Amino acid sequence: MNFREKYGQWAIVLGATEGIGKADAFELARRGMDVILVGRRREALENLAKDINAETGSEVKVLCQDLSEYDAADKIIEATKDLDMGLVNYVACLHSMGQYNKVDYSKYEQMYRVNIRTFSKLLHHFIGLFKERDRGAFVTIGSLSGWTSLPFCAEYAAQKAYMMALTEGVAYECKNTNVDVLLLTAGSTITPTWLKNKPADEDAVAAAMYPEDVSREGFDQLGKKLSYLAGERNRINHHKRISEHDRDEIIEELGKMFTHMA
Image (cartoon, rainbow, N blue to C red; front, side, top):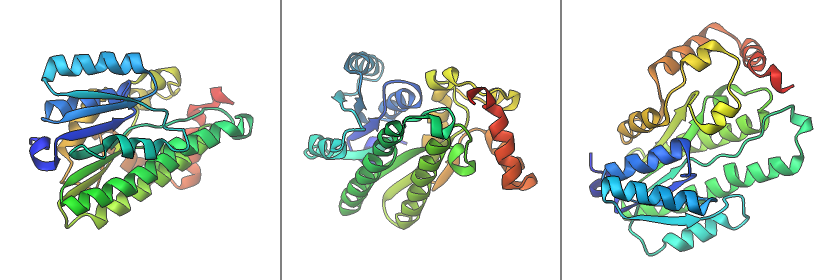
């Protein structure tokens, strides 16, 4: 499917520097869209822009923006107001591993601004814009931790749960329109952050996917599903976990994966 023809000229990827965001930027360009890359590291974004343009011929803009800034959403809305916006891809997330009370609370406040404040304001704005135009798409990257909780990363899991529930609700509200909304949930994905905090669990490691596979599989579901978990092995493992164990058992299982963070 040519996304440009269906949704509009421009896609914006928030959190595009590496991992799933980087893969999504390439995939959106391959599907015909021009792309705006949003992140904090200008040099990395500019290098990525050159690579995407060289491979796909798509026009690529760089928007260097810290999404934890109080007015980050307003700046992004202003920067895109004159463009034919077609798709918003919110990949950005901020997290902190460790015992909940041992992480400086200012870190949680920074996470809140990225994972909730900026996200929800952009979702509100662009869904309104897309409904008015009667076309567009919004894709939120979720995490299995938002479905199950995650000891030693509890604040992140809670904020992901918010993002996921909000996206799914809005997706249903848009179901009978020409605006497609998708919660794309990723399990273990081989990114720099994942490698840094690699879980001590053989099944989780074995199920880990490459970002490019998550991106390709996920975008194939846009317009078909409201909520989708990437990876057949992830879907099998998740179904087994929630059908065979109560929440106490799941919390125990997940907690043991990260006891080295205690």
